[in-house]
Amino acid sequence: MDYININKHAWNERAKVHFDSSFYDVPSFLAGNSSLTEIESAELTEVDGKSLLHLQCHFGLDTLSLARLGAKVTGVDLSDAAINKACELANQCRIDAEFVCADVYSYSASSQHSFDIVFTSFGAICWLPSLTQWAQVISDNLKSGGTFYMAEFHPVQDVLDGYPYFHKPEPDVVVEGSYTEADADEQTMVTWAHSLSEVINALIQAGIRIDAVNEFPFSPYNCFENLIEKQPNQFHSIVKGQSIPLVFSIKGTKS
Image (cartoon, rainbow, N blue to C red; front, top):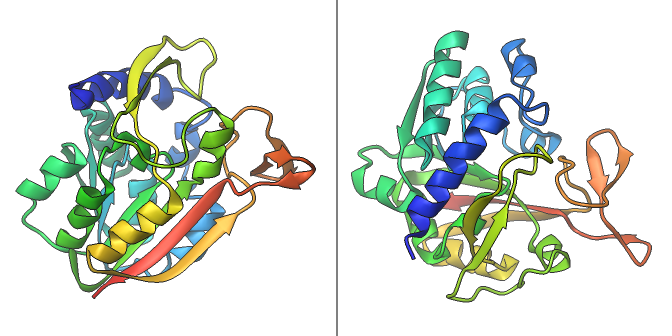
């Protein structure tokens, strides 16, 4: 299955919808607001003056928000439509940023730089069949002593939505619209499940020392069904009266 081109087509279509959606709120970003959530803002600090690689950056709102904090940023995404929008935003905001259209695995083969920070967040790793290869890309692009940081949706939520918790070689092939617009055209998409232990072990095996793992009982985005907003921008999924983990974060250092 040519999952890269299937997903590239889907994300090209999504990029067009997302750029104009209230979910991403591009006008707010253009007015000077950051797209980073409270989780990344609290845990990924001291980016000023650091070179930063953002893997699977979509159309670059988080990448450019990090640039506004002083990072020298490079964003990578497989969607050329998204990368084009990211470049437009960078030019419009007069932010110095580099954007590269490539899938995660092929980018590593062409990259000629190493970075102080490698960053990825929210809804990224499910599109990748091998986390062993993903983690090696991270390690290959990090300087010795450099920081890796990720914030990602917790795989427990996937189980509630009917997907497996543990990884299997065969992908899940779904036909669905966008999480931002109820009436968006449906696209075929290819995903893989990855357990929390799989993520951690892949990073360790690639030479990333794990410094912190955190789990959060809320999502900063209202992007799943039946979420309850207990505090502003903190959406909970309640199972048998209790909030389940919806987000995890990992911070590590290249040995």
